Image (cartoon, rainbow, N blue to C red):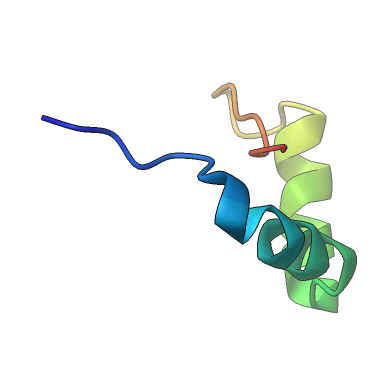
Length: 46
């Protein structure tokens, strides 16, 4: 199966979504970043 992750034509959109995240998304990533959930998470980056 062909993978479509990180296609170059969507790089700008991915960056825009990360820069303009909601306060709820910011809080979620803070919780995940500091491993308070017990799981490992990484944000997609371009």
